[in-house]
Image (cartoon, rainbow, N blue to C red; front, side, top):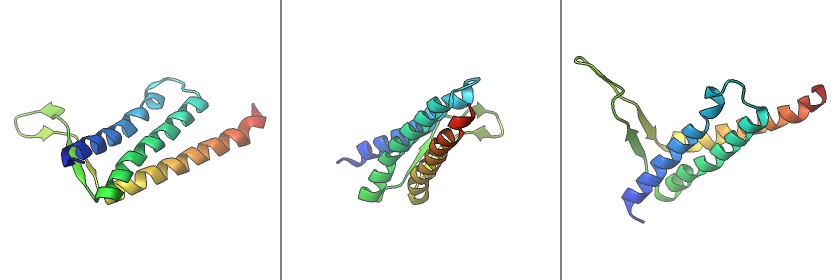
Length: 111
């Protein structure tokens, strides 16, 4: 497959992983079940960059437009998806998802 397509898919997967995790932060009182489903979905989507990295051994950097453009300096947001990011993100999300599922089960009697 073309390297440009893989870079696009890898960057899109990483950004989608982050964007999916934003609604519980923005919403005033998100439900625990909704948040757990978002973490689970984000975990499965984060497997896309991991799979691409493991198959192609490809690293990528995504730089977004500058947020603030001042005379002396620019503030831009960039994401580097390397070996550590590609492996750590799905593992961290699986652990978070497991803790959230267990806490829902454990606290079910307290409701």
